[in-house]
Image 1 (tube, rainbow, N blue to C red):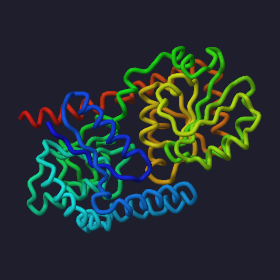
Image 2: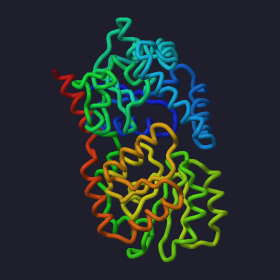
Image 3: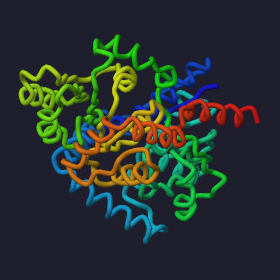
Image 4: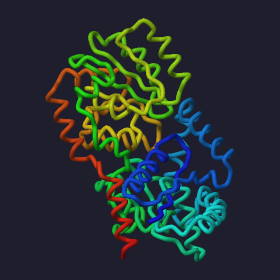
Length: 374
């Protein structure tokens, strides 16, 4: 089989999901290509959009939240009117058409962002023959305008409890596959807590907090760390800043001399850090939160980027998979309570196990395989 995976640069979540699908396809001995959808039109524009998105969610997240709420309202009330995103996707679909003709044929196309899924819808509407198409949601919610991806044969969604919301918005239930958000296969073979701590150089008995802010180092990490680290006592705190070098430098300066605070930049050892820690603080991004579910890490969600992360926050707290803190001080207190209560940690791990979908990428692959053979 030959599978095309269309992603989009807006943070790292869509790319991470796309990479997870590609990793699985290659692992199963098949061909896979991952393409930046907007890059089909212009790499410069794709990079500019990513930089703009990161800048907005880091510095003026309320602006992003306002835009998201407005989009959600328009998506609900004007369902028969195509969105501006769809019109942009339709323009880029010409480049996608050329790419398919030059590099195909493909047995399946997987889109991990709304815009490539919209482009597929536009091509199908105009009679272009498409293989099996799938749209992968990377947050625990229904995105505005997600119903404009009607060309997709299947919608891969994070959890079965989201099915009623999708059906209400016009997606046929038979197209909905609650496989979960695809994550790297590295999370299927986690080291033990002891092995992970030995690998990372941490004592086996030390209480260990892990603080993450996604690839952007978002989630109000600076204020959170500055207020939290003086209260650590004997506990240690690992802070992963992703690709945000400015945040890394700022935190190193703020925590200078604190031997129990470890500031890390970009790392490929996320599974090891997750396996080693006792309590995780993270913004409620779809990918990181899904990885935490699979790892079974007691979690406190820090400040969400308004919009889909707010929906993730609500989903996880409602299912007992994280503690719903309303402010910074409460975030700190909830994490400390988890650290002090083995019973509370085990209760949350049980809830996380019930929600986790560790085999998402395999389920996606098997569905493609079944359709192609059929």
